[in-house]
Image 1 (cartoon, rainbow, N blue to C red):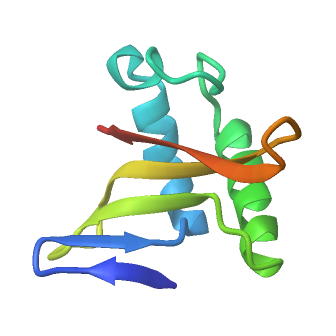
Image 2: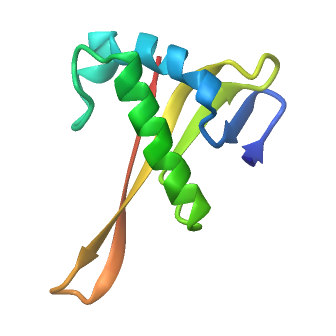
Length: 102
């Protein structure tokens, strides 16, 4: 599923075939180090578990991760995460957004 598209970039749902690239990027400390949650080193099993979790979110209409891809080749080159949070004090939903580029 494509969420946004320009000539140079595509923002789309993560695909299972992206798992190998995800492993490569997450094993680069310059990419993974600033992130809060990914394990290091990052294995294919970690990527597959993340993919499965993100697909469950899409299935219930609550996507949390979007692949940033090259518009010409569709190669994944980063990601955007939207992480919903509920604030009981404010009685409102908020969302934390983060991104990384490999």
